[in-house]
Image 1: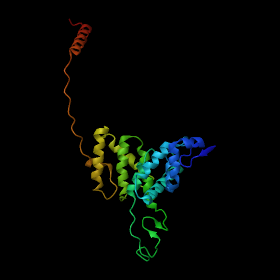
Image 2: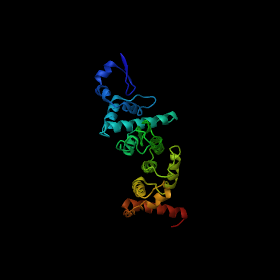
Image 3: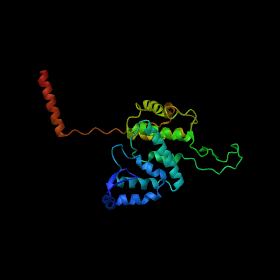
Image 4: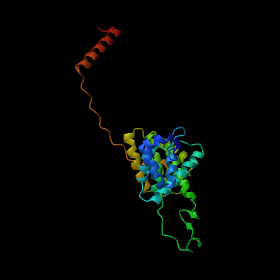
Length: 271
């Protein structure tokens, strides 16, 4: 008898299910899972391959360890799934590789404030929440911020310099600064930063710490979207590199040198 897993979308026999410990544990957890967690796990699956049971179980444990507040975690999962859905509708269907984006969403979540009294400052609408909008719907600002974070993550790829730039810009996006580029052009803006830094930041182990330090200084100073020039001014200089002493030549080096010199003299007709 063949079954279809609602979590990883794999097809398998019932015999294989009973013999796979990860599958048993994963399906046993399904009843207690948050609604958005199943959809979130699907983001790690490629278009042509199912998600293995052991990896789905590992991802589940990792997600559940990110936050002890189930409601907060569920909200972050839902926002992540919705943002990825919008990107996939535009044809960008690369599977997720880690939980970095979900962690960003959790970090940027606005903590719930005290309930507003009926007839308060929002004109008497007791169902209004400043972070959600009327009727509890999703606010445009939050979804745009999430889209910007996703765009920067996709733009960075596996390039170390792009990842450093994207991480810094994501932190700036979280501050909701004036004149911040829209989610639809944030990647173009990141291209400008990359163009400004790529000629002066070429060695990862030397320059990555400088970029991070520059962004950290920048965060406390800006009230509107900064320029790459501002970052470059705040980045510390490279530490001076100690020159290594020239190695002493060996007897073999001297012999080869004399042979080469003799050959050169012969070619030049020098005795």
